[in-house]
Image (cartoon, rainbow, N blue to C red; front, side, top):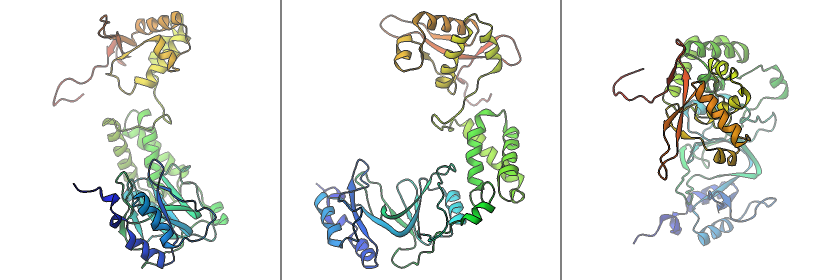
Length: 364
């Protein structure tokens, strides 16, 4: 029986670690925590460790993952290995000669900047962190986590390539800069397109919204042609059609105005509207899906604070308004009654149920 590779001492990237150590880099043994990326010895406030003090706990625990401490270094840590994102980051911070591919994305190595302001890229909507400082670290090239995630040298080498300084804006440059900077515009517009795509009626409306952002918020908007915006709009629209738009709780959903009018005509409009909003939030993006409507379960989940009587009355109001229909009737001991959201047909006064597409090879 073959032993697991990560338990074999030779699986430790000791040759690469030795090269880095001899080149002056400060290393750490990793392997702790649920993700296997936490240090297995204390290091904060400590100077550069001897190589044997890094290797010994790795041999002892079977870890094949080590860290590079970032004293004097900066790493642009991208959570996704998106070529356009990498291009934007290098356009903004300078080209990095050393890239390491991570289990999720990519590390770009630089020397830490002595001046300028480090931006919070997460606040800009980018899946990127800039890590730096003696108490920070990243998993080094050649590392393999316990879950199999590997860190692969993809470009250059830390021991042979001279790292450039990370380019940062000085306070005066930042004051002169306006809006979304060059190098991040395409990515920012793509993020905006995904955020808006479920609230527009077609790609033309989405293009118009993107054009407004370009003209009002982007640096040098004249250098972004309409064709580029139309490509972004078409891409985002395709994601919507494929059902691949998901942003968790930081997202919006629609309430049809005709549905609102129908609810507001009911005597218990406030209760019915509250229930409808919750159902739209939970199920509006999956119109063909049937779901139970159990008062006790919804109350336990924090989806309603209505009494049992008011809940049933609100449910009945939505049925009478044509916005909720019974999908499957209750069968004692086998299945609960389930419901499905319906919508008002825009061109008619009657209600049409939102069925899943049944035909093959056809369109809608």
